[in-house]
Length: 260
Image 1 (tube, rainbow, N blue to C red):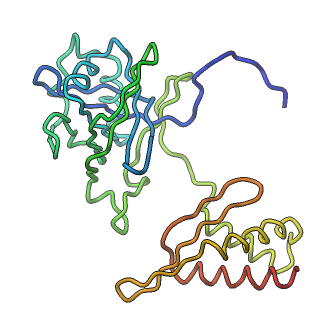
Image 2: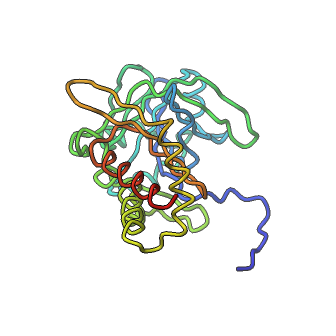
């Protein structure tokens, strides 16, 4: 397919549609932002780019705190409103019900299913925008948006935004489930279907497996932690999983022995 040059553009998809909260002149204010993303895991941190002229910038700069509120799709009208109208002209303190957590200057929106309470640890003037890096001090999730005590994106029903079309959208259907789909491929290989292209990957997997698999005993359970990397791309699965992965590892060992 022929490529067309469009010049330098900020085309990154998908982008979240979040509500950034800050206390400005003693009142909570919220702005809509799409240029927001995870910055680090240790400490857990998030980044958000705020245009220089934004009213919210004053509150973040004054208090060194802010909140990232993740709205569900049913809040789309209010999300759009907070992006269109500036706090310089409109008082947005009464649009939502507001709470405060560990930080007293980072307003949290009750109607949003997920709230991240952040303390500014870095800021960078990039020209049109100031990039803030905030350490996530606490995360709040609606109880009905949890599955097995973990945040469930399907239940959260977050918004995404596309700048070119100027549209808000929902999450689409899934196309890959990581471990489960790889297990199906491995089992297909063990049954003699499409074996040849799996051999070099599985050989590497076996080498990585030997050096990365560790077993821990805690609370009377055996937990297996593994990370493995595909030779043609990236697959990082690092975490605590049970007997299903152990069974998969045994199958991989058998497969590699048959193909050495």
